[in-house]
Amino acid sequence: MSKPRAGLALVAAALVALAGCGAGDPRPVWHTPAVAGATMTTAPGVGAPGLGDPYYPNAGNGGYDVAHYDIAVSYDPDSHRITARAAIRATALTPLSRFNLDLRGLTVRSATVAGKPAATSRAGDELTLTPAEPLPAGTVFETIIEYGGKPSTYGGPGQAGGEGFVQHDGGAIALGQPESAAAWFPCNDHPADKATYDIKLTVPGDLAALSNGVLRSRTAKGGRTTWEWATTSPMATYLATAVIGDYRVRTGTHDGLPVITAVADGLPTTMDDAMARTPEVLDFLEERFGPYPFDALGGIVHDNANLRFALETQTRPVYVSSFFLGPKPSVTVVAHELAHQWFGDSVSVRDWRDIWLNESYATYAGWLWVEHEFKRPLATSFTTAYETAAEEVWTTPPADPGRENMFSDSVYDRGAMTLYALRQTVGAETFDRITREWADKNKDGNVSTADYIAHAEQVSGRQLDDLFQAWLYGRTRPAKP
Ligand SMILES: [Zn+2]
Image (cartoon, rainbow, N blue to C red; front, side, top):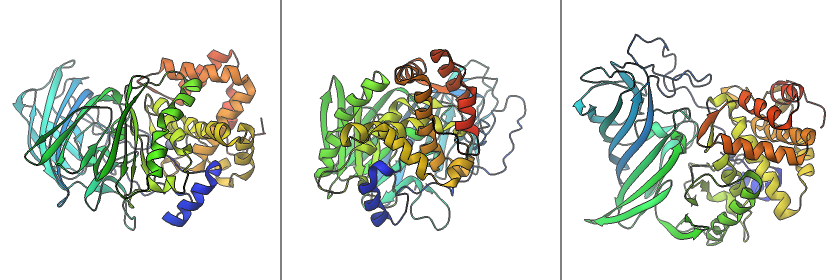
């Protein structure tokens, strides 16, 4: 997720004017756990209703590992209702007499597990399935759920919009972090369980239906068109998106990668020009981070006033249009979201507590881009962040900010400052090696802060406890490196 910062002063000012929000990126502080107070205790053979994330204990579910989602959603823009089917292939990690999926609202019409009808029950955002016969540990099984209704958004009282399946006149956008996926498909809604995806979106023939990955086909039938998308690298649930509405869609290739960008009709063509710079930004980041980890590329600019942030949805980030105002929009936010393709998307957190691992590198990439395009030295970006940081940045440890501070300046700015401090300590060349080898060895995986510290020490051959203790866990301002 992205919020404009100092290097984006002009854009930030525009966002303040437009969104009426100082950060230009409202932080989802109103989020609540999927099922508040639900117990983690389970009987033998029963998959836990959560994965025990320290911040979102009920997010995701225990007992199985999803390999693939095949999701088909037919959407009506007038009623904003969907008719959908999800086929989920998973492996039982323990013997399972019943297990949960996450699903917010919507009506389940039928469910089968391993080819036989399964009983279902609902409690909050938990959908419990009881297979006809218990599943032995190690079983690869498919769950098929037919469902539908009007998808909802996450967000508390007083919030305009929110996250999830966010509607606007003539379309909708499925987007959000950390929660959004369960608003439109049943899933194991936590980044610890990544899977591949086929996403088929059927919409009226005059609308575009964009999603992640490669566009396999676009098939017209009876006035409606099905857009079939494939994500072949493992993806966390919150990185799955669906963007439906009137869009100008551009297709092309870059170094053999299919590139698809889209800008909402009615927005200025300067925004198409900004999206067209996506490959240029990718090339710049590849020089620093190593090979791009995915098989497709792109970006989507929307005009949905209820969504005021940018998100690193895998292969195809989604941006609110207010990032690209003016005659020659800055693409620093593109550098941020594309950096997440390495850090966050390919290399994912195991727990939300470690989100600094994502946002530090994305913020740092913004500093690198500002140095590249606007000749503002990296050291200046660091010093400005260091000297202008609010007191909360120093009292909030980025490596355990608390759920309410997951999207705080500490995670973003102090996170990036931590990387800069590491770079100053071990030298730029070693730091770049730490970065590239981290992305390479953890490609398509899940990581923790402890993993990062051990990796940095191993690559640099240095003892770095004091540095990381002060920058990641301290509650006072560390000395300038
Ligand atoms: Zn971000």
